[in-house]
Image 1 (cartoon, rainbow, N blue to C red):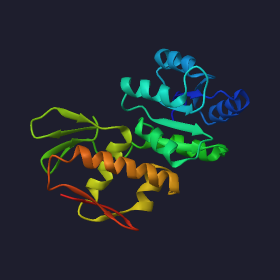
Image 2: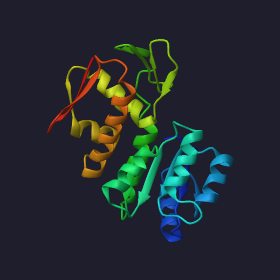
Image 3: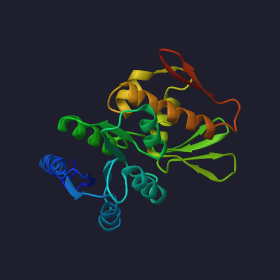
Length: 226
């Protein structure tokens, strides 16, 4: 991992934030630590981090609001939420706002570091050329879909990765647990719910070609038919 990889950490529990900051710095990251959402937004503009670690419950501007504002500016930056919230609706809201991962408190530093590295490395071994997907053109590098000659449709970081793996296994069943572990880090209930959200979004964005279907093979996984 590049020792200059810069991470923005926004966490209002100062003691926890300092522990996370110091732990990440021992792994070669540069960490910009903020204790509220307004400060974090200012630091984002100034420092241009490669990844965001955002506590959901923060003063002045909460993590979800901050993520929404940053995602509107940068559709590709990985966002990992830290939160004590555990209701499925909260998980779904976080991913609907453009979050890439979600870690419940209390968490181990080892798990946080693995998830951060996973998000930063997801582009490492993926092809970058344009591929034809039915009547669509899919460009992984720019994270876009284009239907025929219409305007490009922007994909989120997680949507692009999920579609890439579905495409590479097209007309075969992609096992649910495999893709969850690869893209989310583990296959627990909350990550499974978030993947369902992204599958629904992809179905909508691919809906102009009736020959493209993402089928839910109950109890096993998903199959991209095209």
